[in-house]
Length: 204
Image (cartoon, rainbow, N blue to C red):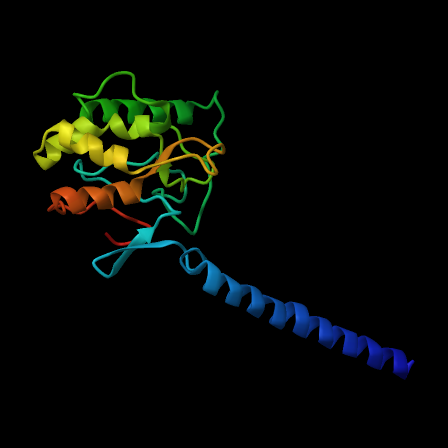
């Protein structure tokens, strides 16, 4: 009995060391060497200051910045510690009222944009933290952004087009735009807005 107990303790200790210490250390070390940026959260920096992660959406309130999809993550949205969708179905009055209110707001804030409003600008993602928009949804906002920045839309549109990310491996997914990267490009081309956008996930 004592012999079996000693063997069991040894096996437990070896398993603990190998799977609980050595394996995580090796995997972490390899990730830091080969995928340093991704292993540390794909953080985005601006003038040496971290302004967020390109994997997590932020809310941008200033009209001079492009806005992401709405978010149901957390009480006020874009809460990286509370990733979730609304779980509201198509027959939900609460969902319908929220979409109607968002449509009215978007139409008011974007009077020069074409109609209809892109569906993704009034629908949340499953995580509530999707950092991307389709090129079409970003281009729909060009008139508002250009007006707020005092430039012609023709100057903003190429900035949007320059930030389009293609399909992964050329075949997977759809072309998309990272909203944080796009807004960072806007600041690079036209200067930072006097009123900073709201960014619950990271200070802006």
